[in-house]
Image (tube, rainbow, N blue to C red; front, side, top):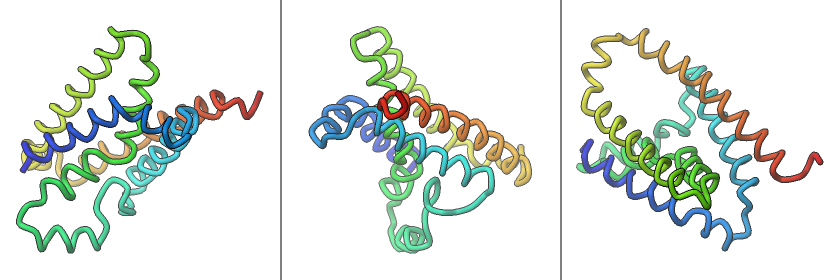
Length: 170
């Protein structure tokens, strides 16, 4: 399940990275708007991580849990999406590649970085049980909250950049 879920999420994220900007353009959505929306989504996810709340942003909702329990194969839902390829990851993939536009080396760096992160995600899925044993429940909560604070800071930065890029303030 870890292999298939990660491969499906990789396909989703690579597709969004490669065609996301064109898709947004066809819908009349600017990169500034996506940057701001992506920042807000990431902020909500970061807040959820810090306060250990289950709202469906980084985890499944009760209805999704019920549906997953009745399925034999949970690789597409909920593993690939929304747990790995969530809206924040899709937005980040589009934005990072859009920022590298015109620079082939930077674009390749973004794609290699995306694939490296997905490889780390895959390895983490394989090692989840061992990580939980090593860190314990409290340790995992501490790590999750620290990462939530860092994600929130990144989200606010993205939102600031989106607002600045939109020209609303100047």
